[in-house]
Image (cartoon, rainbow, N blue to C red; front, side):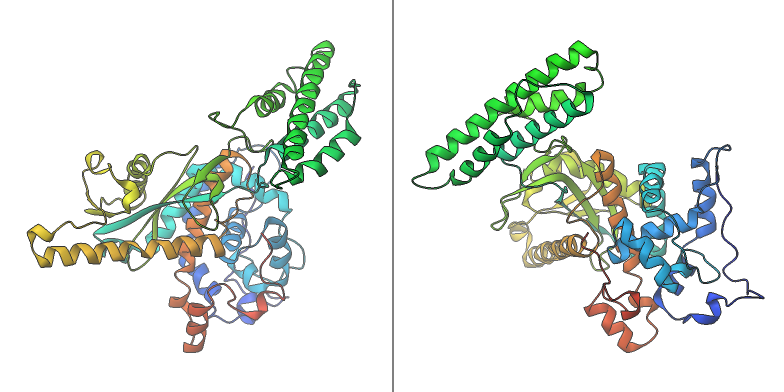
Length: 448
C-alpha cells in the first residue's frame, strides 16, 4: 500500500525549525528540488503499489535517495547514513524539518528499484530530459557509442572457478545434511598454492597439473552431490545451481556461452582492444548523447556481446521514445561499419568521405568526426563519477536499472553549474564536479 507523502516542505512549522529557514535557498540541491516535477512523478508511480498491505515509504523520498546515490556516488548503506547528517539531502527528498533517524533501511532501496523496474526508470529519465528540452530542440545530430558495464566479480580464472564449485558443493551438502565421500579440503589448499606458478618457466608444468586436478575434484564433487540430492528428493531445489556448476566443469577454452561467475552466470567477456585491460567482464551498454550539451538521450543494456551495428537501431528507437524526435544524423566510430544499410538516418563514419565533393564538404565531415570523440570523455566521466564503472546490482535486471540510473544522475548533474549561487561556486563545480561542498561529509564518497 502506498504510504502518505511527507508534509509540505514549504509549510512553516509552528513548534520546530523549518528547513526553509535554515538552508541556503541558492544551494544547488535546493534549486534542483524545485525543478523536478515531484507531484507528477508520484501520481504516475503510485500505480506500482497495491491498495492493500502495510504503508510504504513516500515515493519522493525513495526516488530522491536513488537520485542522490548516482549524483554523488553513494552506496545503499552509505546514502541512508549521509541523509541523516546532511540537511540539504533531506530537503531534496521532501522533508520539511530536520530528521535525526535514517529515512529507510538500506535493503528498502533494493526493493524499490525492483518495484520501479525498467518502465519506471524510463519515465524518470524522460522527466530529466524535459529539463533539457531546449538543447534537444536545437540538436540535429546524436552521438552513439558503446562501452562495457563491468560486473562486481573477481577476475575469472579456471582455478578460481573450480575452487568456487568445490566450496559451493560443500556448503550445499552441509546445509542439506549430506555427507560427501571426501571433502578434499587439504588437497585443494595445496593445489591452489601450486597453481600460482602456472606461468613460471620451470614450475609451469606443475601449475597446469594442479589446475587439471582441481577440475577433476570439482567434477567428482558435483556428481556426488547431484546423486545424493536425488536420493533425498531435493534435486529440483538446487537444480539451477547444479547445472551452472556442471557447465563450469565441462566448458573448454573454445566453448561458447561460457560461465565466468557462479553467482552472476550471465556475465559476458568483452574484448575492447584496450592496452591496459584486454578483457572486461560485464554487459555491453549503448549510449546516445547530444554533441555540445552532453545530455544523454538514450542508454540501452545488452546481454552477450552483440556487434555495434546491431545495437544502434534499438538505441535510436529508445531515443525517439524518450525525446519524441528523430535526429537527422548519427555520429559513430568505425565499429559501426555496416549500419548504414539498416538506418534511415545519415550515419557519419570517420574516413575520407567528401573529398570528391569539395573541400567544404570534406571539412564539415572532419568536424563532425572530431565532435564524435566527445563521447569518450563522457563515458569516462560516467564510469568514474556515476557508478557505471562497477555495477553492484544483481542479475540482468540490475544491469538495466544501473545504466538507466547512471543516465538520470548525469542529466541532473549537468544542471548544477546553472544553479550555482556565485562565480567561485561555479568554478568549483566545473573543475571538481563531485566534491561539491565540504558539508556533505568528511568522507564524501563511498568505495562503491
